[in-house]
Figure 1 (spheres, rainbow, N blue to C red):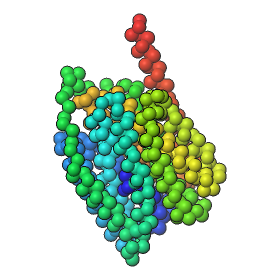
Figure 2 (cartoon, rainbow, N blue to C red):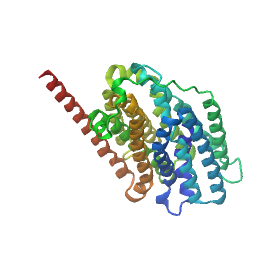
Figure 3 (cartoon, rainbow, N blue to C red):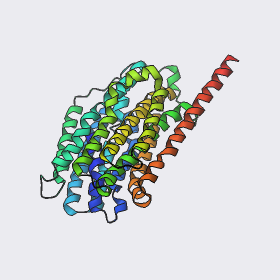
Length: 379
């Protein structure tokens, strides 16, 4: 998680300095997310045969290699090499989101939301650690920010050491119902699946778009300092993960759908908070709401997803879910700089509204389909 917060904070700033055109400033962040999206399918499917632990460690090692390449790219002042480096780091991070599924699979169904939330708590530390080492490492070496990536390598190597102690859960015996894996088209026909997937899509698309553009709009267009910008991004990332302490309690009382609805409302208020006023407080409130809304949508969608698959189908559907989510997230990050440069901040914010509208339609259809099934059952 520290890798993600590090790249999100620093990627567009370095991109602004190295890119041949300001519209490409957010390309490193987009390439980072794109790398994660491209690696999602092979990473998850390889876990089926090789196990989660070996893939977790291999992906962490790949992230280290990407950070080393980034140091070389900075030394050469090459935008192309730097973009390639963060893409490799993204490839290495592709296994990161599977930690939540590994945790969920180790507990009873009623504790799944708690397990997913507990994993996300690590993001609170990452919120400070990633941007902090980015700033503190800037001037360690002669080449600016090379020391930042060196510190990130140290953090990642420490994570690999911790992962070496991880013990995988034994494979769960399949029931007769689980053994018959259904066709993908049959699984995709379930409305509940699309509510779960679109919750993640909406959360990551909106979060990626706004968060990636914020350092550019705040630091370069409105003159806020790098330290102030760092504080807003750190607060945002804390807000992404801090709700994980109470989300399990909230989910038990209002359910996944209630959690998803609260997340969408937080996003709408976020748009209003920073739509036309660009003081520090506006950015801070908006980015905190962005983080809280993401948490509610992500945990709600993740907890809802197992309703749509059997045990034998989990890797296939988890891969479909994460590939869709991170593909859209990559698109948001890639478009952020172009949208900001070409159409402005307000247009960028307004684009988030149709995304939430699509989720709203999916929820309505799911509820309608459930009522139809209940009515037919009674009949």
